[in-house]
Length: 348
Length: 218
Image 1 (cartoon, rainbow over the protein chains, first blue to last red):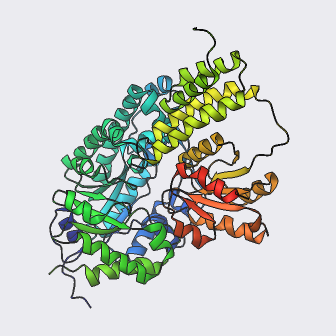
Image 2 (cartoon, chains in turn orange, blue):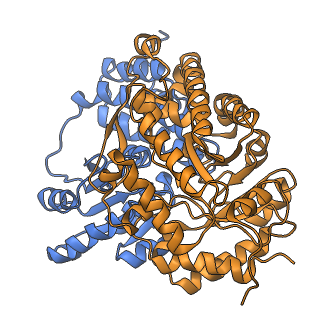
Image 3 (tube, rainbow over the protein chains, first blue to last red):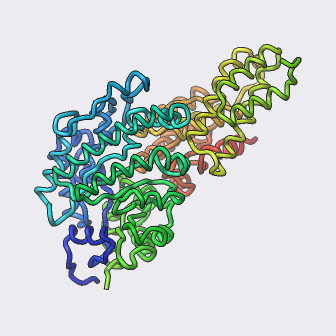
């Protein structure tokens, strides 16, 4: 079916991020709880046992052969280290239960930027990054996760309150955003030091499903750009993921300085490619909730083929899901994504 | 003041305060309703609800986003708190009950809260189960309240499967035919709603009122 592959996953992804043509389209399913389940663990187990998390990643990538390992354990870890209290269910990722900032005037001055090697679960997560690097470094790219500064703000303040603050307390909100940005920069630095080859900055609260472009430009963009630029100065690759309708802010996303922009099925890849494909690598956009979760490998292959047809020309494209892959997705559907890039994603 | 204000004029002011998210104005005009002995229920339905309906339309058109809707809801709630104690309760009219909740494992409740705001304003009785709601709670709440509709929301691809569990449990409890089920949330689709045996799907919060009216039309 396909000729022998000529590049390592590391070379392949980096080539795509540099807007060039690799041997074939890289494929990076966003897998976290999916791997945890593949390896037979409960999510709460890996929250405290980083070796189990690392094993779940290595087990899954060896079995399915996609192009990136993910240190995605840092779910809200920065916000937790700054005082938000998490709820940790038995077999799904944690969520913020009690936000750290209740009273803006009283609680903002109390915030301390966490020390990545000392505070909260941060040292544990960094250990995971380092372990993944030891295991596959140089051959398979290691992704480290840092939440976007606006997301971090929402996780410290409570999303609904933060959204209302845009209207009622814009200045205090910007002060909080400034602290969040500093904290994300400092933590990101530690993630790179621990061995991450690229950083995933995720900002689901920034889409057009939530806030206007005007609000995005005022409250999100300047801080997000500062955060991403700082990672770029450390020499790492960065991809920015905002799921939801971002059609009116694709250019702003590209202007943040990220190497790649990851979008979901609400964005047409052909349009994204023609609009910003000359500046950033495009990643997307197989539907995790519909196609991966509920359809057949044949459907996954077809949706993957269409995605590549729209956006792989000339390089600078990565086949990815629109968001995190649910634990219940059948293994055959992830395998179908990998088969699809080998079948339809080879560059001449 | 310039004499006694007209009732309709005050209701229009209330509607405008909701649209503009003007909390101070909403408070002032709600107090004016009470002071002039106008009907509090009418003020909610012909003032605040009309405003919220406009907000819903603006949200649907993409002119309003979540912060704007939240601010409008905040203004509305301030006025509702003032007006509610003055409503003359009509015991003969039984409002249609709707159970709402974000499914187990999911804490993203903004969309569900928007749906609640819109349905509340439209006169439905809402039983709000909150977020991260265990599967059995939906079934229990529907039975206990004689609800005609269950609305479920999930904002993560990872928690969507919980919706199916609720439907399955309603079937197992022999209660499926007693309620209509609507679902919503960013990763969901009509196709998904059909695949899990729900009755319908809502694209966004602004479609909720129409959907519930359709589902409960007799």
